[in-house]
Image 1 (cartoon, rainbow, N blue to C red):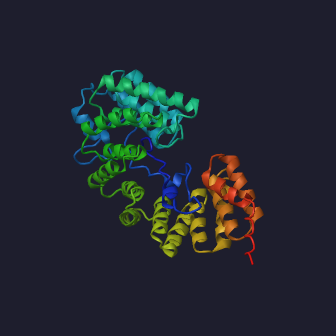
Image 2 (cartoon, rainbow, N blue to C red; image 1 turned 180 degrees about the vertical axis):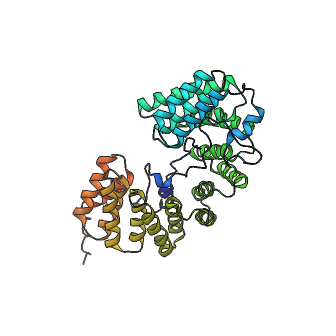
Image 3 (cartoon, rainbow, N blue to C red; image 1 turned 90 degrees about the vertical axis):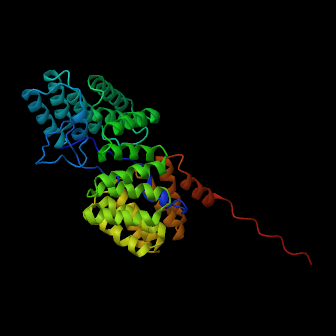
Length: 387
């Protein structure tokens, strides 16, 4: 069953390539975001039995044992099942309406309110990241609506862990880091053995710059749910951002062992290998990522940087241009293309690419620095030595 996707834009390749004159993926790329964990019901109800264990990330299976909410009627349970089905199919508007119908059938139960809040958050298409919804008024309004629903769920049943976890996600999206951690702490306290609760808090800590604490939570999530590739990838990303690159590589490798089809994990492994200086192997992983997800521009930007590192100029240029064909507003691709042209001695082409980057992002520091170097007057010749 489905739940809101816990993604986080970690600026992964920006960090990896920070010592270079170019940026690899960056600026909102999905490739650098931790992947979604397994998905229990959006409403936070559990149908598990002893014969059919709950999904690894089901918060509800833990929270329900301590719940003070009244039992659901068969009609309410059926309505929630319908809503969860729409959520699983990513039919957000349909799911939202179905959860609202379930609220009318079970007005004293928190599950329909949590479900509707999750449908709202998932339908926004923004990552689980600090302030990710704060710059768009319409999305900000919807997140606030979700928070109000979650507050209702919390009042109805203060022990319903999913209500606190989703409230923490929503608070983070509005830029309220303190409230996010407070709610996620409450959720983990209610469901300490639930991998998704612990993982959500770890991702929030990573977004708030608490990298070492994030690593502890994300490692704990793996211990609770060792067979889910997405959790390994999140842990690896935290390690990488803390400079523990060799450990990150091993964690990414384990994630790929569990899910060889994960383009994101292969992309991130390639970025980590670039930081270690293993360019040939990085290229192999990045080419695999592009093959698995040919329409994702971020992966092509990172692959282009790897080709550039190997001085494969034509391949790098082709990768950047393909990324731009997929998304011509990808600032990092323009910056990297400009840097490539500088290395190739194509100053006019470099200037055009860098100016395009600044049109998209006037504060882009690498583009500014390279343009300043390009436009700087030639140094004055040294005076002739006196005779």
